[in-house]
Image (tube, rainbow, N blue to C red):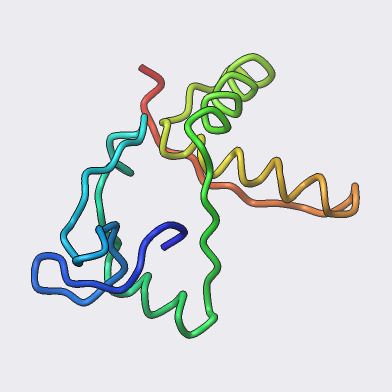
Length: 110
């Protein structure tokens, strides 16, 4: 959603990463679960309706968050979750010190 535009993928109208002709283009992410050119149509709906906001995180930001979490907490989160940790760190910088952020993690630590 952060980098895509409306298009059709697997019969669903959703946000996709595509060229000017609407052809799906290759993607890259260090996170296998995020290396896909589209999102589910429910995410497109939530974004378009304003009920959800989706932020992009770079591979470098995700890796920095992964290392920070590993070094400070001893937790090896999945790289997909490390994107959420990176966004949580960004949000924390803008919030009051006593604010709480809930960040869900996945991964087996291997």
